[in-house]
Length: 305
Image 1 (cartoon, rainbow, N blue to C red):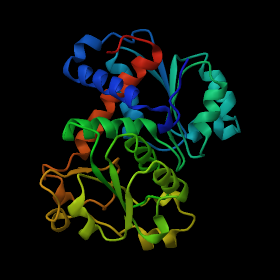
Image 2 (image 1 turned 180 degrees about the horizontal axis):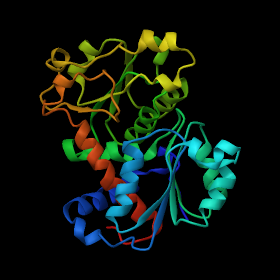
Image 3 (image 1 turned 60 degrees about the horizontal axis):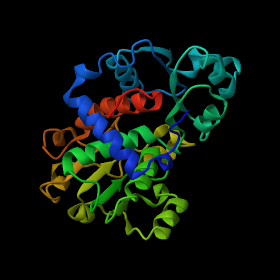
Image 4 (image 1 turned 45 degrees about the vertical axis):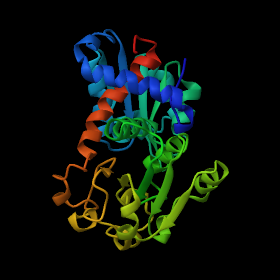
């Protein structure tokens, strides 16, 4: 039995396998329509979610399976004090695989240690979000036709952004990639991630200037400043509008730049950018369903490519 808890569980070979499977599912959905008939996924979401929860549920339904679960801690026995370990033991009696999102870092790992079924980390605090990373890799591969030799810009909340942390780890596995880290001083990438990049010999630069650095990027990964990660409202209000991507900024970029965002956005990408062919964030959300279908098939030991 295998789990997906961290981006560190991903290898280039495994990513390639899942991308190939996701692409085949995209092109031949009817071929996979009954692959998980009789199987059940439990979606255990202790935090709010739209794309991640619904894409997991849509993925399982698209494979012919069924869905159980909850969409907030208040609607589960967590509100009565039940531990994650006990919840997953119980869920293992009812489902064949589960996806868990939790505000506390390490909760998905704890769940995997007590689970009788495969566990997928759907986001744990500000730590990791590996299935968003798979979604991002499929998006980049689909748009750029490669995962190597790219200059990847990440902008906004790089301190608490679990999608950022996971994507950096994944993209540093591929030769020739470099990073431009754009953030205010208070939201810089954690030191341990920069140390990992340095040890791996991966080039990166830190800057506060999006206007200047956007010219060098092949991929721009925008993120929102997350109110839920701040201890006080004052800091959130001060930082939330630091970077807003609009037509003026985008006019400085390469013609084949790929603008990505894990969503939801607040106002860090102006709606005037939505119609630009370089904006792929809504396609990115669609790719999330297909890569999660591929992952579910793989962890359940079903067909896949």
